[in-house]
Image (cartoon, rainbow, N blue to C red; front, side):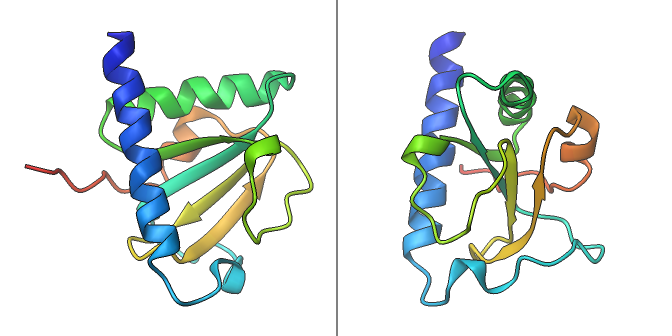
Length: 123
């Protein structure tokens, strides 16, 4: 079961990379509020020593198992254009890789899930 979870996380990461590098617009162009939109994916920037980060990682792994597009990145590995000041930071993207909004600090499983649409199924 752990292998399946690892494969899903890797697939989500690859999808994020393809979307991120396939765009010609700056990813930080819109870091505003949700405005009723639901995101196609969420990326969590976390650290290993942060207890809230560890809880968010559990939430995202559960969401991945449920078919949502989630990526977990360690703060030390993050090189994106967004200025990360707090961990955990959640970055919500539309299906084209455009940043819709961001949230700093801990969020519950329900709070994160309510902002996401299920990932497109690959058949």
